Image 1 (cartoon, rainbow, N blue to C red):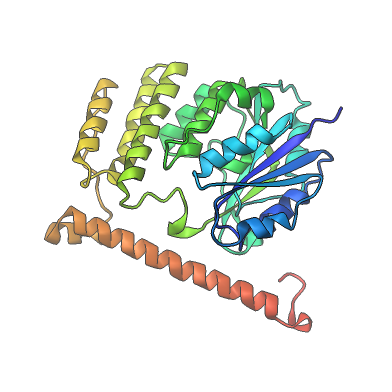
Image 2 (cartoon, one colour):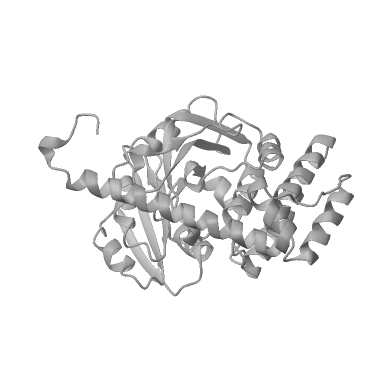
Length: 344
């Protein structure tokens, strides 16, 4: 029989976006899919909007707010699929995303082969998504994939993966104690349970950049900072469990160095832990450096104010870019049809 693919969507206060997301899930050309939406205690009408799509193939359930990982665990407990497609409530799948990945299984894949694909950032207009290939966009072994991720600070967006039920069950549940980077930690375990990654270049995912309100934004939250570092320690343990070599240890040290700026100077305790971990791996961490735009502020008033200034200006830049993109979208939708050009 044709395998059933379960599209699992955790949703929290996504009323403005979930219609597009569900539309992209329903538009899949793969003939057998089920869609399960778990509303995680939304307060903005997400549940009401999602229930408008309820049907034989679309199930909508709700629970008290427990976080995205708990909602994903709930969705998986309800699904029947042979393959699992995770999809956040504001991201989009290209119509043939699942079909192209499922067809790729016939090229020497096993039930434990992970299927990934390309993804692109966008704010409000999916057709303007920017697809930038990285060294993860190819067929790789689990150890090589994780080495490249830590070595070059790369990641693969959650919805790019298509995972068999066998591997999903072997990986275990999402870690509900992680406040951030729960997806990075989870897919480490998925990789470890697999026999490798098959990259499908002509399947696509559209990743909506929601700015500083997104769950992955750390900012100055102590809980998220601690969660990020715990996830990093787990990442390092997972990689070294697959391969402990000079290269993988160096990749782990580089990973710690890249993220050290998120802990310095506010959390000297975590900085000390990171330095000790790097030393145990045979490396040494250096004090993070600010870009020239903020270095002069650090010299005058110190690290803390300079870092806060950097965060504020980055947030302001993002707000302006997002507002401009939204205005262009609004103009495109309200422009009279006779004024629209064929390529607009």
